[in-house]
Length: 54
Image (cartoon, rainbow, N blue to C red; front, side, top):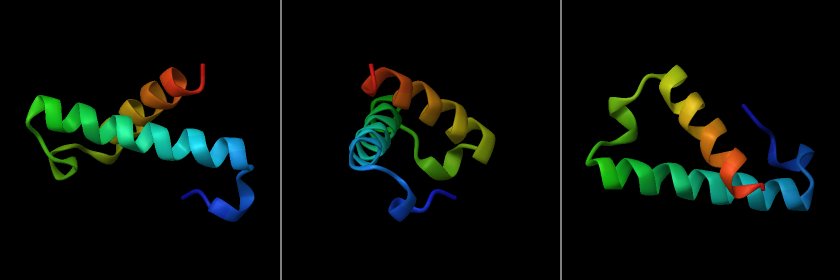
């Protein structure tokens, strides 16, 4: 698990934006985070983080 104190301000903003994007995707798909495995959420988070940090 990430510790927010270890993240730089820019990384914190990108992480928050990526989480928002994850939940937007879940809402659009009509599923909840509980429906995903941990690995599934990690993959989605990596994709979202990549998109928001470009």
